[in-house]
Image (cartoon, rainbow, N blue to C red):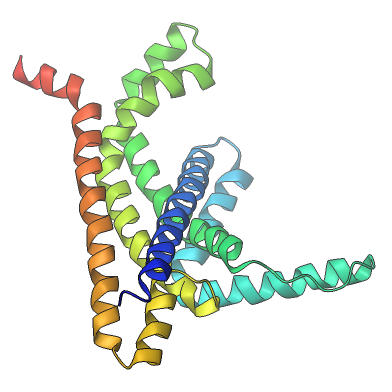
Length: 228
C-alpha cells in the first residue's frame, strides 16, 4: 500500500479534476438547453428535446464507449484526409466531454424545473422595468432559480462523481484504474478497492458540506422572508 501510495494519490486528484471539469461543462450545457426549451422558436425547443431524450435514453457506459471510439475514428478520418496521420485521443479529454454531455441532459431538466418554479411575475416585472434579458436573468432570475435547482444539482454532482469511475474503462489512470492494477499486481484487490471506496466517500462528504453552504447562501433572503 505504501509503494502504490503516490500513484493512488495522483489518481485521486485526476478523479477530482475530471469530476469538476465535467460538472462545469454539464452545467453550461444544461443551462443552455433549459433556456432553449423556453425559446419561442420551435426548432430550438426541438433541439433541446432531442438532446435530453437521446442522452437520457442510452446507458452511460455505452455513451462513453460510443463517443470515445467514435470521436477517435472521426478525428483520424479528418486528420488523415489532410495528411496529418493518426492522432490518439486523450482519455482524460474524452472523459470530460462524455460525462459533461451525459449529465448536461439531466441538469437541463433540473434547470428547466427551477426556472418554471420562479414566479412568472418576476419575469414580467423585469420586462416592465426595461431590463435587458441577459441582465435580468443574471441578476434576478438565476439567483432565485438556483434555490430550486440546488437539490437536483447536488444529486447530479454526487452521481456524476461516482460515474467518473467508468472512464477507467477507456484507459484513464484515475483512482479506480490504479487501484484495479495495484490489486491485481499484489493480489490485495480488497485492500485497494477499500481505499478507493474511502476516497470516494471523502469526496462525497466534502461535497455535501459545500452543498449545504450553497443552500444556505441562496436561501438567505427566502429564510428572512419566511421568518417575517
